[in-house]
Structures are given as C-alpha cells and as structure tokens.
Length: 506
Image 1: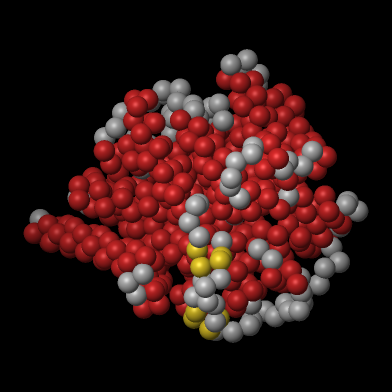
Image 2: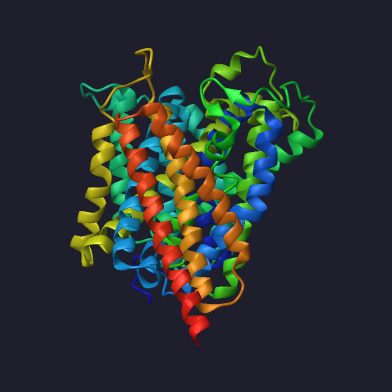
C-alpha cells in the first residue's frame, strides 16, 4: 500500500519515536498536575499506574492491531464493518470534533509557551529545520539510520542552548495588529496545515523520531532526579474528595488524568498514522503497548513535580507546563547542571511534543474528513486540512471568560470537555475493538472490562457537565456526546445479542 505520502514503512525505532511523540504531547503533564494539585498526588499516581498498564496500553496496542488487520483503516472506519454505516458516520463526526478540541487546546498552550520564552520558539524553529534535513538524509540521500542519528540527535540538543542565545520576539519580526499570543497561534495553525499535506517522510516521521530523544532525556533526568536528587515530598498525598474548581473525585479524576492512564486520541494515532507506517506486525507490541508505558512514566514524573512542592508554593499558581519545567530544572541540578537550562530544556521538550501532537491531530483530522466525504487525491488532502483548521482559526480570536467574568485561556475552558470527549473516544474505540474480537476471535474480556469502566466514567462526567452548563455551548455539546454514546452502546448491544441468538439457533 506504499504511496510515498501516507503509507511509508518505517524502522521500528523511528516509528516508536513518531508514535511516542504524537501520543505524549502535553496530555500526560497537564492532566496529572491538575489532578494532583486538586486531589493529592496519591489518587493521581494510583490511577496512572493501574490505568496505564491494564487499560491505556491495552487500548493503544489493540487499536494498532485492529487497524493493521483491516488494511490500516481508522477505528471509525472499522466501525462501519462491524456496527453500521450510520454508526460509522457518527463516529467519524465525533472523532473529527475531538481532534478540533485537541488542536485548539494545544495551539493555545504552545503559543503561551512561545510568548513566555522566546528562546523556546527559536529552538522549535531550528528543530523543524533539522527534522526536514534528517528526512531528506534518510529518504533522498539514503543515509542509514544509525549514521543519520549520530549526526542529527546531538544537534537537537545543541539547538536547545542556541535558542537561549537568540530568543525570538515574533511581534518585532511580523508587525500586525494582533496580540503576540494570537499571532503565534495563527502561525502554528499554518504550520499544522503545511505539515498535514507534506509527505509523511519529509517532516512528520523524522521530526517525531528526533523529538522522541528529548522525551527520552526527560524520562532519564526525571527518574534519576526523583530517585537520587535531594527533593523531598511536601505536598499532601490526599487533599479532598470534592475539589471546588473541578468537582467530585469520581468521575473527575479519571477524566482530568487522561493521557498517562488512557486516552482516546491514542487510538486515532495508532489507527491513523502509525498503522500506515508499520513495517511488520510484530513491531506493534513495542510501539503500541511500549509507548503507552513510556507515557505513563512521563505522567509519574509530572505528579512528582507537584509532590515536591509545598502547599504555600507560588508555583502552584503557574500553568502546569511551567510546574513541570521547574521540576526539570531541579532534576538537572542533580547532575550539577544549570537549573535554568533545565527549565528551558523542559519547555522546549514540551513544545516539541505539543507540535508533534498538533500536526498529527491535523493530519488525522484530514484523514477523517476525507473518509467522511470520500475525498481522494491532492485536492482531498487540501480540502480536508482546511476544513480541520478553520474552526481552531475562529476560536483563537475568541475571548473566553470564567463565571466571574475574568478572561481565561482557551485551553482552560475547553479542558473539562476535552477530557470527557477524549475518554469517551477511548471507551468507544474499545467498544469497536470488542465487537471485532467477538466476531473474529474468542478472547474479549480483557477489552470488555476496561470498556465498561470507561463508559461509566465518561457518561457520568458528561451528565455532570450537562447539569453544570445546561444549555450553554459546552452543555449542548455534552448533551450531543451523551446521546451519541448511548446510540453506539445500543448498536453494539443489538449486534452482540443478535450474534448470541444466531449461535443458540445453530
């Protein structure tokens, strides 16, 4: 199925880098930090450990295997075969809207980071250039992976320090009547559009492979810093069952901590881009299950960043990305390195991960739009990409307010709905996989129990959002998602009961 654009087989190490970078993003950092501050670090830690091993990694690996057993089709497209064409259309629409949430949230988080640290913006631009050169080296100049990695991986770490020497103030380079944050958001969306259309080997695949080394370094510094650094646990292991800003621990904890425990977005990456680059089926285990375990470790490090703070720390008022970056600075000091360079490294690593999530989400959104309207060729790629980024383009120019009338970031108002949507997507992906396993194979209980748990969690969360937001925009979206979930559950139950009836007759 090789086509040189989307279907391009990759070495296992390269594809692990793409998959890990794409699923990681800011999710395993933002959610666990918010939950640890609200409920205490122990509930967040337990959910990450149990969820990652028994639910999240199972979900990711099964999504990848299900996709490659169906010619690298998406989970939504597989639903058409085992549920109904109507279910597939609704699933595709739901997935597309979920991807738009992801783009809006992560564009907002990245633009804030670029405004706060111009050096991170510079390093990110250098890093994209390195990725293009790395892709050309592999696929045009036929340099082997080991030799290319020996040259380009060290350069990725060089640009971290180069960025600090040349911090970028975008408002002084591009003079337009826009706030700096909104300008960066617009530039990021243009980048997403270009990355969505370019061949996967030129930017997406090599960029994600290189960024994975930043993430591996974060994991290394984090683990060594936690185990051998001089930081002590100060934050309470348990705070409260009912957090004023979030709600009750059940179901809010399981929605807030999405990535790191289970994330429906991972099924989109597994069945959207990773399955189209899988070199052989046996690689699916380390890529699908292994990458999720690595993400769980990132979430544990994020929780530790909160555990090391005191309840009076001013850092608790900062954005989650800054809390994580500050902890990375402490971990750097374990190696007698400059803590400020550690903070910068943490921010750059985070922005690199978010960029991988952004353009992967845009590309998958393009796939979904093309599937929905059966669009083919270059024109289909362009139309699908533009349709996916037009709503985020509108939303970055909107001002969001909290109940008190204060301006708040877009990611903060969308996060509760994003978490519920993301986790519901995971539950529905498990539902499709369960039906496929029941139809084709014998063992399916390892999918059934995680699916039932996540359905209960997400439906409870959506019901609470409906009660809280009533007929506002968020409330109406929650109602639609709730009804969609009930419809797909009904479809699945009807099909399974029909199969059971046919078996009894025979």
